[in-house]
Length: 408
Image 1 (cartoon, rainbow, N blue to C red):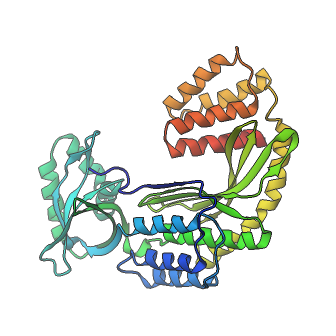
Image 2 (cartoon, rainbow, N blue to C red):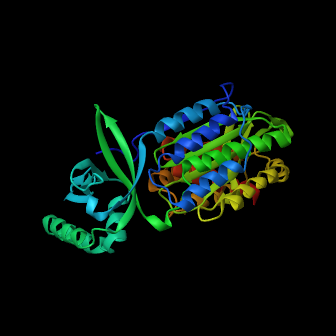
Image 3 (tube, rainbow, N blue to C red):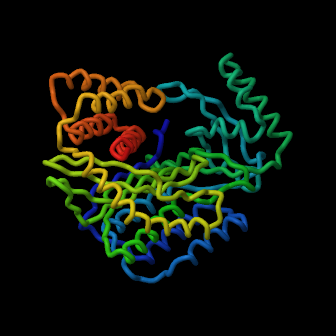
């Protein structure tokens, strides 16, 4: 069984590496569109409208690291494909238990257009099994009960009968393809209604991010590079970091940036957030601010591209955050009361933070009676605990929580 994603790429500190051209960004958008083997007229119009919002020529983006970013993204996109097919082209094979958790997946044959031969055999991943059973026959809860009773064969026969009864119902299936040992293995990662599919996939969000940052750079003359990127078959998380270093009081320095996140398998808006890096005495911490704007998957292209103008708010937000950092005196020893408030805000976050993270914070909490920490030293330790867990969501949450602490 494959992992959460068939291909994960990570980039770090691309300062000094080549920039892509604007024409490369437009080519990436075209390749992303080609993942869709069938596009509705509305979907196709979205791609066309998005491209017309910006000037396409061979000028440089002038954002270091974007050449490699696009190369990695295009390679991952080659493993994705989209099909709109009727239920008669889905032949139920099994509900196997896979992985360490014995999670029940759906194994099926995807038939050819003439409904006679097998085009590929596929397995579900993420929540695709649940999505398939829910969207087709609103039957996932019923099937979960059958699985608990070990009635897999009954469930299979029941599903086959339903498919035979409603052969012409059509859905859109999003697959990723794992080419391992020269054998193509298809994995179904999402099932959606054909009429309700929203096309703000990672390619469109990456296009908006790169063109938005290029425009912001031109307006402000503040140059950026790709500080980090996490790319998978379903998600992107990018951070653009300013090359300019701002000096504050007592030798504290700050760099600003923008982070962009999107998930193709989550029906929610992509986010563009202000972020910043505080450095002092050899330590650097990363904080993530409130969203600058969101790209809503249901909004018109023009509405979402207009949102890029919110990047202009960075200049005003900079002033507010620089003042907050100076006021926080991140280098001074913290008072016990303030330190206790910060610890409890993390220890008590049971719904958001996992137990293994909170236990590390509690361990550090026990040492505060014997040690005096500055705010920056504590932030550095909290961020380090999250990094050790190798969980991007925990790290994201911690950086956002620490930002809220320093600003309020």
